[in-house]
Length: 282
Image 1: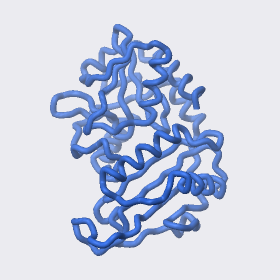
Image 2 (image 1 turned 90 degrees about the vertical axis):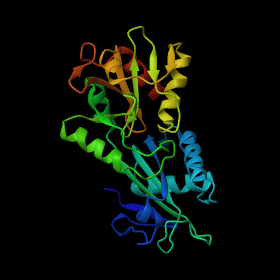
Image 3 (image 1 turned 180 degrees about the horizontal axis):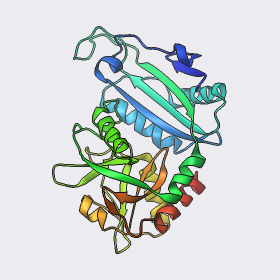
């Protein structure tokens, strides 16, 4: 359990951390967030997450004037106070506190900043990668601006819960055209029978994953054929390999989708190679 959290301008015991009842993040989900993996005290893909954070704030017209450096100092102090060398850092920024009204407040208000950190068992994740995971497919019922990392995650929560109830690790979301968009909290990938690495191109229907971006750069450096296009669950069922990426999963092999075993049911060599290269690059 974390010992300290950060709210607005101060550190306080985690159990005492709270926000105002009329905070717009609580009332409307009018907020954005980011999550960094922390390994040996180092923020993984540090700059990519900051870039996405400020883009999300800009897309929602949340006026946030604190610099990246200021946030970084606060994050490292939170890690120090919680004695975390390996874990996850969660940052949420809402529009702030104002009387409840759907429209933006007319007067400028200060955004609410919340930071928490927790330990994460990377050894357990590595063991999971050795065996691979199962995913299920679910209808994608989210809004049309999934490129913004907002806290409006109820459809994601329901999809993740459906996966847990079926004994799966993740749910892949399928759009109205029968194509996979992404996981409930991850990016979806497959490797075709011809050895092409395939993932959906960036648009407003998926989050621009930071780990995704790094893995694409690694794949190009390894001269792995890469195609950014959508794929169906049926194509995934017959693929050579499948995997997910995220800040906490890194590259995680998928060995079963719904009731279909992928290839021989063991993590693929390309998936494991990309995972190793990702960790080496951090």
